[in-house]
Length: 94
Length: 449
Image (tube, rainbow over all chains, first blue to last red; front, side, top):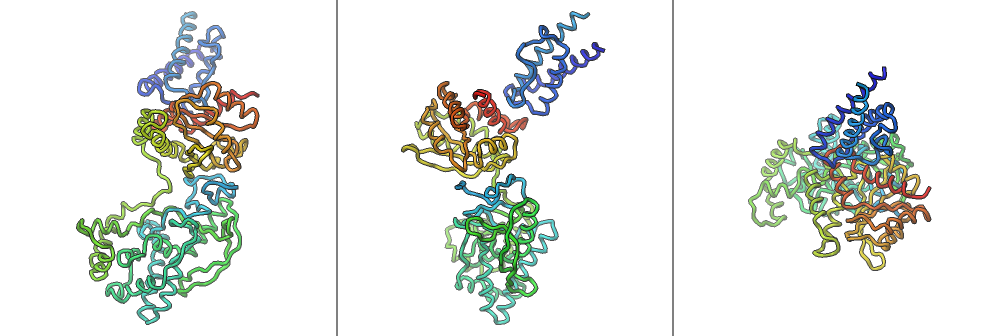
């Protein structure tokens, strides 16, 4: 069951990273819409529930603040970090 | 309370923007610079609008009937009466009350029913063409005549809108044109009133309003005459004797009816223009070199009115002097149409938002104090300074101290924030006003709990 949840979160973060990277290449300083942020945060919350404090990319970061208008490059950076950490966990469990 | 350019809805604290309602929100102390264009009623797909246009034209042609029957005096009297409709508050009057036309002009108009055979026989189809036949009869008269004839309908429309939106009304007596009897009758109706002078206010659907009527003298001059200097009166005389030219112009304009649309009270500038203005602002030097301060203020005025549009209605720009320094402000109505705007209304009594513009390299304590002194009843305790660079730490600290001591919130927006607002305006990913909200939240996080 845990494996299924992990695979889902991994796939979601990977897909989000791919999508936002495309936007980021075009306009790295553009804001990300509230609609997108809501789902990105949902995926990040699921990832946080899987990762231990030591496995998480940053101690101080858990999800994006909607009011702070994160840019596409901010979101890409964080998603890439999460993707890296999830990959670490995956390799540990092969 | 001294609001800047107060509107009916602001007086009653009703939270809706111009964009959300079907009528032009009237100002309390001056006219709305728009006019009812009867052509929009004529071209409208709505049968009701067409019927109202027919009613206007029939009523106007009744003046011709009276004239041809030898009852010219009554026609003149009626025309004078319908030539001003102060209740609607459209036009360019600074006091909301204009004057009716004089007897001489009225008589000149009535004479058209005798002197032009086509009009004498069939009457007008678009009475706006009087602008092309008689001097001193302009767009505001066209608008007022049309409003006077359909006043009864407009009263019903006003009552309906007021009931829907909760605008208070009071009983008042008004003279209304009776379409069946072709005379004015006094009626007791309930209408909203101007709180400053207790005069009744009638609302007008915004789909009928334009800055210039579709049929107008300047357009006629450009389309129908060779480009050479001619006296206006000479042309009007020529038109009266060669009515066929006017008829051809009207036919031509009728064929172009698809291009005739109502004008919004405020039109945001397009993305390309926003980008150009931003790039000019970013290149401007700070200070007053080469009138950079004036240019900065002009461009920011145009940009901000567009960037926050639909959430904040633009009220006015104003210049004031504080301690011998000329200060330029932007004023917006706070309609509480966004969570953050509602918060500043509730917490800081901000009924109108003031933005002060400062094209300086570094913000100084005095700049903060200037705005702080200006924050009064109508602005509440919330203001924004728009400047070029991040303020020095001690100045930012000063704004936090102001909040701690007097619960006054002064936000500072810089070139970077304006740039982000423009970017959001272009990409449509977020509302540009979110940048102000972000600054507000960041400011509150810095404030002591």
